[in-house]
Length: 111
Image (cartoon, rainbow, N blue to C red; front, side, top):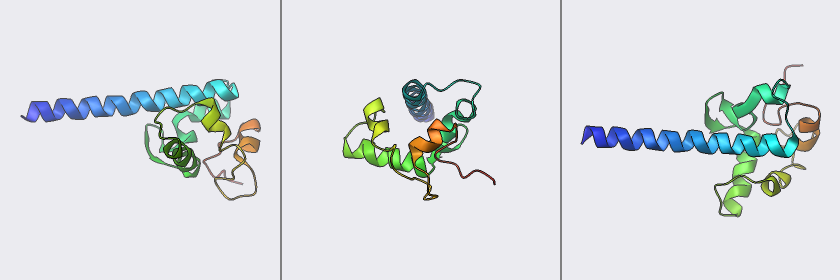
C-alpha cells in the first residue's frame, strides 16, 4: 500500500513539473525570451515564488485567475495576452511593459 501511495505521489509531482515546463514554454514562445536574458534565467519564478515552482507570485495568481475563468489547465498565448495590461505587482507598470523591458512581472526588483 505504501508503494502505491508513493507511486501516486511521484506521478502527481511529475505532472506538476510537466505542466510548469509547458507553461514556461508557452510564455517563452509568446514573448521570444532569450535563454540568457533576465526573464530567461528567471524561468519558473516568472509565475512562482520558488525556482522549482510551488506557490504562485502575484503575476502567477493573475494568470491562474484567467485560466480558471477559461476552465483550462493549459496556458496559451491568448491567455497570456489577457494579463498583459494588468499591473500584478501594483507598482505602476503593466505586466507587458515589464516583459518588454526584460523584467519579471511577478517579482519586485530591488531599487
